[in-house]
Length: 343
Image (cartoon, rainbow, N blue to C red; front, side, top):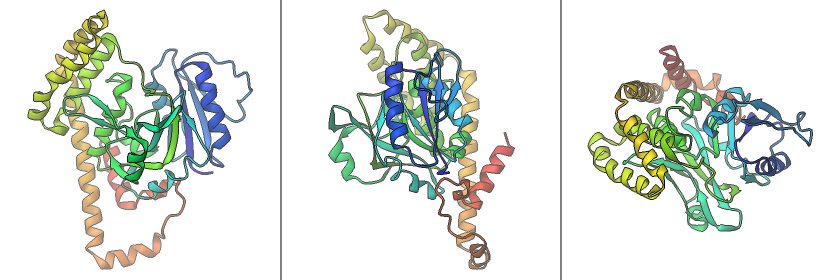
């Protein structure tokens, strides 16, 4: 087994799902598993049940909900989320998987290029902006590729590799925020936990545009406001509060004069008064930060004690299997286990 689980949340059209599956099944690494999480009926006309594991989500479930369910059911230590309408090519995972040998790396963001114009990069990761918005990292393909592997805040949900343990410990895709914003919310949690996301330009995928759920109306406004309040401490309260009104104005004005602009504003007002929901998130971020500090302290102790290092090294030879959970160093695993024990 490669230790890789490829997850396709099937929330788009059936033709888009089947196009994505053709490319995944044709180019998947040997030994990897493929899961399709369905939020709609699917007749499986090509009889893929032997090659694909179909997982049924509640009807109408969002991309984030389907993706989280897929991660939960995956058997691989590394999971790759591929949105319907996204296509992969031969060897797309080969450049991504070796990064997970680094215990600090929790995610890899592929370079997603436009299917009709590969000079245009649609996504190279995602970030949480100080005003509370989700920002997609994009630009010219050549410019992004020239950077080589670099750190980014997080991967976009529909084109992402995750270490399953880190995804779960960081809380995964939260149902508290609107589905298209869940990846930015997760990026903040991963950073709080001391994990890194690497943008890998040699790992390429293709799509016609941003495959995140289309934002609209009350539910989006509610989730967008929750995104801001859940993560404002991560960028600093004063800065976040100063920039937030401009962020809201930009998004709401973009929807007007359509009624959904007013619906989004109503959702934001509701999200703003739900202050009782956010202390739990702040406690989660604090716990993740504490876990990261403990892991760093363990590493510092080991590195500063030659006698401890000599005793441990022979018993822990370098790990070569990328997909194995053992790529997480003992000191990191101990910190994660303490975090799990605290609930």
